[in-house]
Length: 281
Image (cartoon, rainbow, N blue to C red):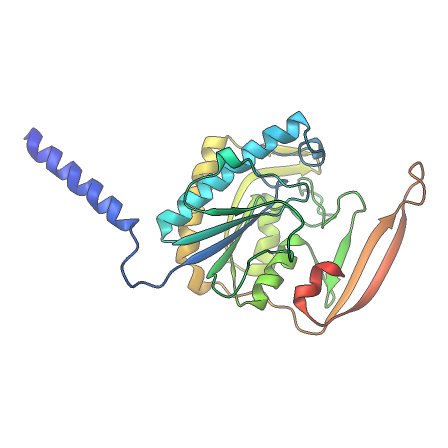
């Protein structure tokens, strides 16, 4: 009886391993992950994201690496054959010795383009540890590009945050956003722009810009793993996010003439004829 149980267990283990081995001749499934820091598990203060070398920031980077590891494992379990992870946080946030095996990691500056090495060979994009656009009442650390100058952007009359910006660039290559992680406000924003098929995983709930209801890491990492597995399966049902060209663009931001005085609001309007130039407007 014990021998039979042992045999059954070995068969079960072999079947589990087979699920993770790519089938010979099958098309590769390449996934591009763009990360930020504000939307990671356990992150809710600007002190954790703004100042390089700050103790809170160094710990927040570790939190991010744990989220990335869970997503990489989930994507691989779901059938992804090649994963590229881009450090999309301005001051950079990767911790090399905590990189999960099974992916390639891009970090450091300067580098060409906002989404380095993204091309049409990728089947889907994951926006990991993302945040809601500037002005979202319950968006933890919400901003668009710059939290200091409080930038806001409109494309063809629709106010858009970093989720839409990254997705539009991916859409140029016909790549859909298949998964978004962050707080509940970020997931709500993803639903608006990318629809119900895009997998959303909330790792916290915003109370205000620097206050949140946090969830235990054991729970968020399991949810991220499960969501990433599902995300590979929905690639065919997710549609690339595209902006009609030429893009009628508007930007509002603060200019500080003197550090001691409030900033003055500046508005810029114009036309963007190439979505790959979106971030330079």
